[in-house]
Length: 299
Length: 259
Ligand SMILES: Nc1ncnc2c1ncn2[C@@H]1O[C@H](COP(=O)(O)OP(=O)(O)OP(=O)(O)O)[C@@H](O)[C@H]1O
Ligand SMILES: [Mg+2]
Image (cartoon, rainbow over all chains, first blue to last red; front, side, top):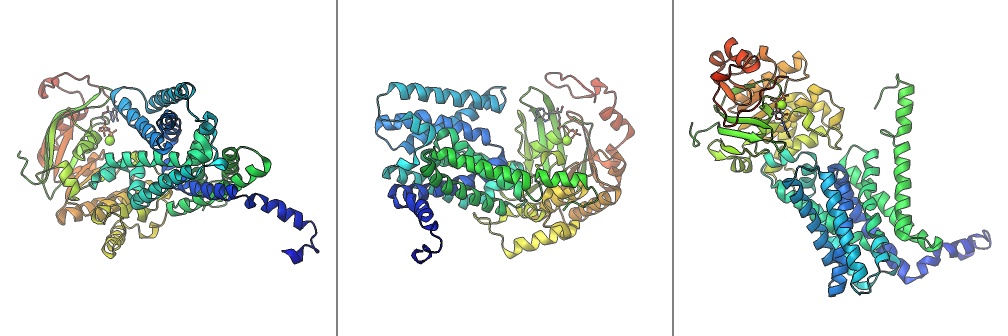
């Protein structure tokens, strides 16, 4: 690099400016954590979008708040409290749905706002050093060592479970009846997917915060879904867009001094919009062209 | 009707959906092994509900189902039952190919990781071949015509290689040629020893390939060999003005409705 400096004099400072965040140890850490979270969320998001569980993701993410507060108050790892309440909320949602004539979205709406409100009440009453702002919006730049460990454990468990059961989970999303017909325990698959969802939210909590975590759980899968008809490609595209957004988002949030979770999700949304307009098969542009030139055979 | 017999035994089934609609009441029937049995009834008569009950997707509020003498759960664990759904029960935008779908018929034979063996692959390509869908193996499932979709799911049932195959309206929206082709496949499968229950609205073709017939309108109104059962009289009872007195009386009288 140094011998290039005389030729492209401006590159030196630019390079320095680009590298500056990477000099700080906490930035390196934050970027690695975000990238990891990006992978975990992207993998799960393929299943969540195909299953139609986006709203469930939103619900679980809000329902973890009281769990985080209680965990801090009791001196437990935040992940334990978050998982317990997140998963507990899904069980309650399932129960209420089976016992009433309400539609699922109404049940979800009632339960998760209830949990969230309870969390707010707790957070403002229990004296603890929980920073509500950090729970809501994430704080990956200031992530502690123990939080990193919890993130890695939750994320690692998620990836392991999905890797191990990926075909069955896909079958469960596509055709639960057939899954049952070949003797699979669909009830177990349902709760497996829900607990993996809760684990992923625990994983992403520090990076995106509960308000934005649903974007990380839905957007990469939705983007990939617009770009391909094959599930393995969908997984790859989802992971790629997610990791790119997470790494660049974290990086830019340092330079621009803006919210990390916010910039990650903005990037994801931009990629989604690009896919929506320019996707080769399902893009709005191609479909417009096809309509104008009906003689062009569709692929 | 005993539960230790082969074939499908349905004993006194009643099904109420969560909206309190009584879709089936006191329905009993028997599907003989190694036959093709046609299931006939009006729209909303409960054909799909009966299928879903036999498959264990819907829990009846009374009654029992046995398949080859086993409970439904046990029968499924042993890969005894395959089901070809009515077309509108499938998400056609799902990113899976025809070959992927047919391979799902083999999952029950694979290990936990569902890694296909050579035998699994052979069964898949053979099933695709038999339904004439080899050329479409790598198409996304939504990019098929109605008849091709039916054949893809029939191929999955064949790959599953189960003794009992249930098909919910495989002929709806299918042209004459494809219908002939599916019928021929069903006849072959029967001759190979499979037990087949098939619902259809194509009354004209029933007597050409169904050994036995079950007439259903919220309960089983008649059953037996097609020659005995598929009569003018029975059909008008099933589809037309229902002489209430001739029916087994349900515990709570449902309202009859005609569509
Ligand atoms: N999931 C459900 N919830 C509530 N009611 C249902 C449900 N599924 C079916 N029904 C009702 O149960 C009755 C029987 O429906 P079913 O689908 O078994 O009829 P079918 O004989 O298969 O009709 P078709 O010929 O139109 O396929 C209908 O009146 C229907 O409205
Ligand atoms: Mg039906």
